[in-house]
Length: 376
Image (cartoon, rainbow, N blue to C red; front, side, top):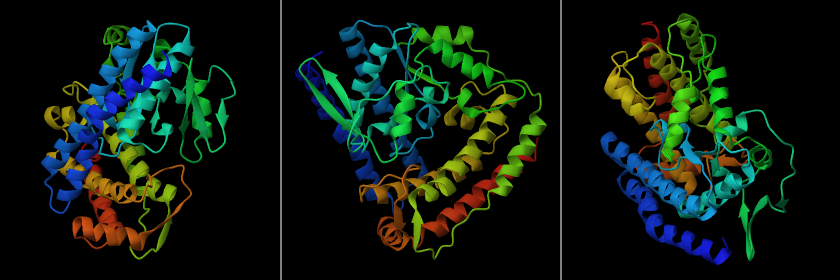
């Protein structure tokens, strides 16, 4: 594929999808003052549906151009239907072939189009779970100054920028497997009576579902009750130990620390609760929020109200930061001005202090999680 043809495809997707997707954020901003949770969920579903629709279309286009066989799956929030309007895309390109160079080339080119449509600030906002598997190579990465990476074409190249401190992630990305069998083996290894991890269940096929047959044939999903009491005890201890609540009068906070305290740790514990319930409650057909809400008898509907209220507060924070061209990021050492964030939070929601609201909502969510865990 030459650069001219690629740019035609890219521009077509920007024209077809950018305004629709970014318009969801604009609409949310206009309604954040008093938006109902049902509408909040509907907007996030539209965001997710648009992304899946784009991935399917792009998968078909590039599969035909490159004449290679691969599938595309989602992990993370887009797979478990727990995304917000600023969620990263945890996207995996997998194959049964041993030739990964073409797959990685397709991956880079599709991801760049998604990045441009969504106006992500770096290619690392789209990443694969394969980086957690053992590396299969130690290739040096063709990077240039300012953390930029190259998309090569016969008649030119595109420089694609990453956010700060993404070099290690990019190194792992380009030196990881793309074998669906390796991924299945990894899931099977960490899904058993001695391990419980929500990410082994959170895997959604969105392009070329013939690979789903391979997955189902080889994936040994463990859904027995062995050691549940131990997992419950460990999670209760983790939740109780997480007593990180920032002072509402704090003037400044490091970006990475803010994300860890209010997003990474809290959501990790919440999803671990879902993993425990999923293992016990065989009525739940798929590991996503909608199935838990509709199919589980173990989870009170109030839990999801508290979760969505918490997720909305996180989205408000991300919206405020996004307006300043900042991502809420684990890799960012930037110091954020809380007073300035609160001023914007007041305009957005008519509420005074975002740290106070995050603290309150975190405590309520954790309290309800503890009540559920005590039932086991």
